Length: 266
Image 1 (cartoon, helix red, strand yellow):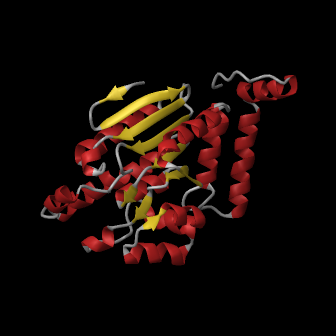
Image 2 (cartoon, rainbow, N blue to C red):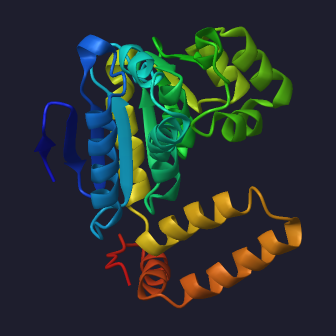
């Protein structure tokens, strides 16, 4: 799948791996309505692809995503409350779409991830960063709540409540090295290696059975908000489903026969 509509670049760099690149480099990939709508459309298309295993999201140029386009947000501030609420849901829908995507998502964070861009990165299942990456909430500076795009749910789970609130209330920029130390990202690489590292990771993940990958993502996130017994019950139910798939039997046979498995998504 190769898409180039100037706002968004979509390609398949390796079998089973899709690369989605926000493409407004002159504006630090700030989100506009056309970009938001196109990204939502592409994510829905990727979700339906049975040949796909992993999605990598990154930004063109020197930023991952600088959040909502400030000029456009200022214009929207004059509209009525119901319309603004609908607009807010539309923006935060990006984080929801990433979280609900059946395929694991890797955010390759190159440069700043701010506001809704931070929310987009946090919604990914795995985050790796280039040395130039940095993370900021940003909303408090605009007189807004720092709780947006799922940030108030994800951030304390990743770095703890005190660190999360400190970042949200001070408008401080967290550099890549600190983000790795605090667990916000799993690794930091030189900027010129970041994308290749993300695709390599995606290729490794894509080598496994699709049901197992999708089930791992679904159960993992569902269990972050449930109690322990419900979590174990959900794990048990999903594992029974997985062990009865043809791909699971093929994986076990291939392991015993010391060969590479051939998965067919069933």
